[in-house]
Amino acid sequence: MGHRPGRILITREEIAARVRELGKEISRDYDGKDPLLVGVLKGAVVFLADLMRTVEIPLACDFIAVSSYGASSRSSGVVKLTADLSQSIVGRHVLLVEDIIDTGRTVAYLSRNLETRQPASLRICALLDKLERREVEVALDYVGFTIPNEFVVGYGLDYGGLYRNLFHIAALERDAGEGGPA
Ligand code: PRP
Image: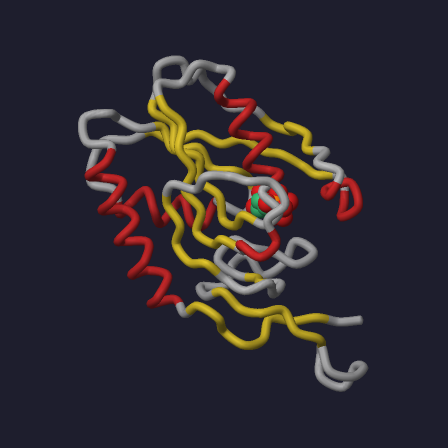
């Protein structure tokens, strides 16, 4: 069955405005700390690229990648590191940047993992928080938008690898003419 991006939930302008606010907050909170922004591949790439340019203090960035073993094993909490950071984070002020927090399992795993590496601090910044879906408790330090429990695509978020390049966040909908109501 085909799916495509449908109704726009968050416009390009709303995202840009909120990202600028987050950038201001981060600039204030990390002044003098030269933070290391760590983007979680692949979804966070678009958000990170925009966010880092709204931050007005010196910063560095790096990337980390994880995979979860499909839907069933995600609920079992199995997350695997598939690409690691390129540098030590000992003594660094690390800000983990995610596109979306769903069950919370990915970010909980990454927090545990990164905490063992002795950063000076570790905080989490997520563009989208799908709070209704939370299975493990995670403390989010910066949140762009809290969204309802709908499958969303765009601005880094994909469906089957597609639609990350949309400027806005849209709900994924069934192709017209295929089956009943979504
Ligand atoms: C998404 C998102 C988070 C994770 C959140 O990544 O970027 O990393 O899922 O879900 P959770 O809170 O239930 O763990 P995804 O696995 O879709 O990979 P991608 O970023 O490469 O698209």
